[in-house]
Amino acid sequence: QTDAAQALRKMLLGKQDMLDVDRQELLSFLSGGSSSEYAPKSGEITGILKEMGDTMSKGLADATASEEASIKSYDELMAAKTKEIKALTTSVGQKTKSIGELGVQIVQMKDDLSDTQAALAEDQKFLAGLEKSCSTKTAEWDERKKTRAEELVALAETIKVLNDD
Image 1 (cartoon, rainbow, N blue to C red):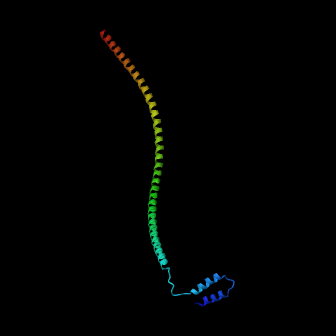
Image 2 (tube, rainbow, N blue to C red):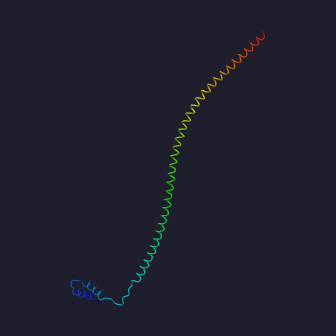
């Protein structure tokens, strides 16, 4: 036994206020010492723990590889989405510009339409006046032709009368 164990043994024997059961257990423990008969039984537990450690290491490696693959997939997805957002933003900008240009064209066409409608109204008034003027002039022309025909008949009769004399 070691010196510390012998010192504890002496102290236990000298201690009177301790229960006998407790004293016997401690003395039994101290007298057990280190015999060569003892064979450690922790080999099985060590094997289980090693196997658990190996399994966990493999699980960690698999999880790490899976996480790295997920990160790579995420990065690729983010790059694709960023590219898509950029393309869509450009498209929105172009369409917004196109909407503005079309809005200006619509306003111009509305102005042209109102100008054309005003010109049409003016032209229709002019046409109505022209048709009235034409019908008046046609009537006057017909009257002149009739009067001229009558004058020609009168002249022919006058010439005939003068020639008959």
